[in-house]
Length: 201
Ligand code: AMP
Image 1 (tube, rainbow, N blue to C red):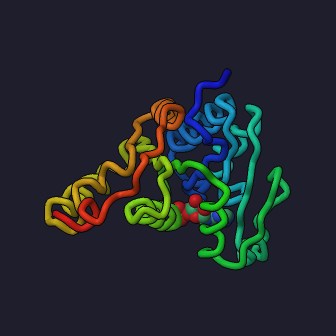
Image 2 (tube, protein in one colour):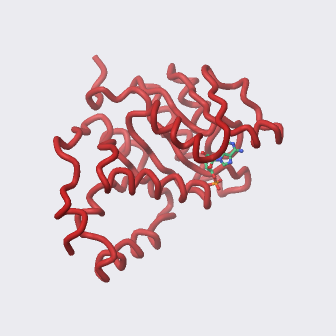
């Protein structure tokens, strides 16, 4: 019997599309993919064969999981490959694409990435902050990549731009194993954040 978070089957992974990173980032992406497959999870991701995205997705597949890719028309037109996916969903644009990724996934893991990844992470975070979803959101902080962002989050709370409860909506993992352990044991909160939790400081 697999030890896993209740009802979680498909994990949405956001991460870098770059092929020019230090090997440490691909290593964690691959390790995460391997653990996802071995723990019975499928991946929902951007669909391409680039960078950390493919490092992770290919290992999910190699370890028994399915790959669900969601890509907007523009990237398909640019020649991004899509035949690597078990199921492929074509989206009109980036917004539509994120909606689809959200609709078909039960949890989110964010690895190191550039502006695309940051934008995806921020949207999921705010969706949860305002009670539109209760999904596990994990930030995998490979190589301390997000240390400065996390410091900035402290400033955001300290200067009262956000409530201190907001930081509890995401889980920061140092290793892929920590990320998967968290997802395996995740219990959805019964209630969404209250008006007090969102707006008090
Ligand atoms: P970035 O962090 O800027 O490299 O952007 C990566 C994120 O944006 C990924 O999580 C993807 O969902 C999306 N993305 C960026 N480039 C592509 C691509 N060529 N194909 C599919 N998705 C992409």
